Image (cartoon, rainbow, N blue to C red; front, side):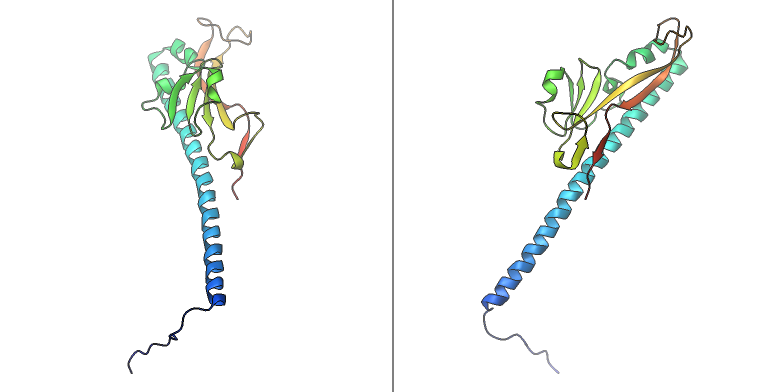
Length: 179
């Protein structure tokens, strides 16, 4: 038995054409929504990985300084640009800038705020990102010195207190609204 053509030799009716366009439109809308959601997931994952890499790089640097006995280098890290101790800077890292320049930077950029000693990331998908910070959507990271306060005065005194490491602090809570 040979294959027989079952399609009618007539053009599509307006109703069939409209139904096809509607189905394609619905599929395109679902596809675009999924792509936009994946873009937010990708950004959130990228930021998380960058923060983990930063933490690991700084911990490696601190470990080397502890082995060397260079406690002063550890103490200065808390108020300096942590990217300087990384083997390779982040993708999207612009460099050190003043506080006033942060808002004008391109979304997706990392920068070191020299005035406040902060590492800042400017969010791309701002509508899917929630934070308590006013102004442009961003994540602010600061390193805090962890030290043995030998004289119990509540502050680090070089030569008296012993620097033991630095702790990465994300200053304000944030949340990605992934749907």
